[in-house]
Image (cartoon, rainbow, N blue to C red; front, side, top):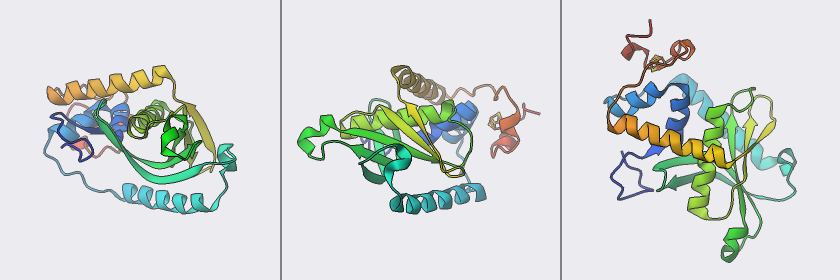
Length: 210
Ligand code: SF4
């Protein structure tokens, strides 16, 4: 279960996808780690993957004006990890602003960009995701991360999310709660709303959601 990016740590290494799932329903993360279950690749996941690939191709052709930037280097599909958080992730796009020389890496600003198939504004799960990316970028590459962008694949608009101290603290607390739950194998209560249950792939394991 450990990531090759953080070798030698004897603890569960979560992914940023787990963080998002936890916001949706903590039980999904419990099932993922505590039941020997092979999760199928659904048609929806495949559609999402193709939409991300198309977005990346379009990204290469367009200017940076959509992000309100004059100049930046683009890095696609960036793998990041944090030994402190015990978390790994893969970022759709990272924008690099500032000194290109490694000696001046502390002057560089990184901006993680996440592509989303939604018209809605970024909810807590997306904010946590961007903050986690920012924290991992700082730990992996140095420099500073002040904000992230959400790019809607549907509206082709960009939303800026400030990566505040309190948002970062929320990420630490959520990862700690996930770790406690998985390491103690404590199944959490079902999601308080039944809406997420309707299309949940783990529905057959939840006998208490009606
Ligand atoms: S069926 Fe509902 S309670 Fe069970 S894991 Fe899915 S979302 Fe959570």
